[in-house]
Image 1: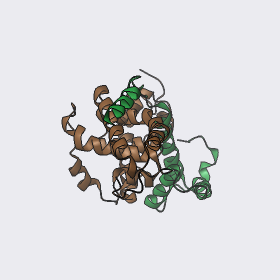
Image 2: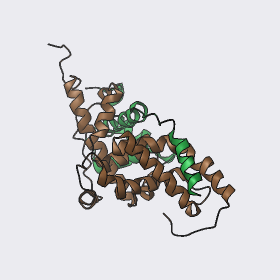
Image 3: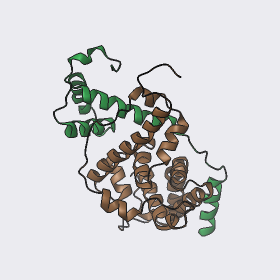
Image 4: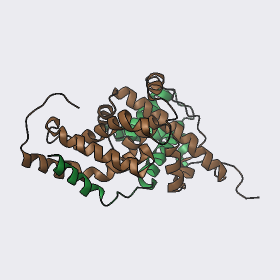
Length: 90
Length: 199
C-alpha cells in the first residue's frame, strides 16, 4: 500500500533500529531538534520505509489534535470574577 | 513553585504582571481545566483558584520567564491536590499507581499499528476529542500540553515535576494509546479494510 510517494520502492523495508529512529522522529516532530532536525529527517524519510510511515502517521496525529480538537468557550464572566476576587482579597 | 523570593513587586507592578502576563492565558487555562475535570463549574473553580494562587505567590514569579508554564503548573497541582478528590468522575487510574508503573523511561518503540495517516486526517473533531478524553488523565495531560498547547519537553518537565526522559516516554505511550482509540474509529468507518465497496 503506497503512501503518496512513488519513490518508496527505493527505501529499505526494514528499519535497523526502530527504537532509536522513532524516538528521533518524534523529537523532531515535537520541535525538540530545531533546524538540525530537518536534515536528519530528509535523509531518514528518503531511505527508510518504516520511518517514512511512522513519521506521517505521527505527523497526522499531531496535526488533527492541534487543529480539530473542540475548544471550550471561556465563560464570559470568568475574567471579571477573578479580577473582583483579587480586588476583594487585597 | 520556587521557594526563592526574588524581589517584592509593588502593587502597580503586580497588577501589570497579572493583567499583562497572566490574564491573556485564561483561554488555554480554562480549556486545560475543562479537559481535566470534564465539568464547566469545576473548570471555572479550578481556573479561579489558580489565578488567586498566582496572585498570592506573584513574588515568586520572575518577570520575563514563561508565565503560561508557571500558571499551568499551579493549575495542575491544584487539580491533583484538590479537585481530583471531589471530582464527579472517579479517576480511572490512581495517580501514584501510574507514576510508579509508567515512570520507567524504557519504551518499546514498535511499528505495530496498522492505523494509516490518511484515515487519521479524515477524522472528525468530535472523534479526536473523544479519543483524547478517553485516555487516563496523566496521558491526556501530556498530549494536551504538547500538542494542544505547544509546550516543549523542558517546559512540560517543569509543569509536571518529572524528568525530561519521562516526559518523552509518557508522551510516546500516550500517543500510542490514542492511536488505539483512533484505530477503533477507523475500523468502524471502514477506513482500514481493503475492500472499497460497502455492503
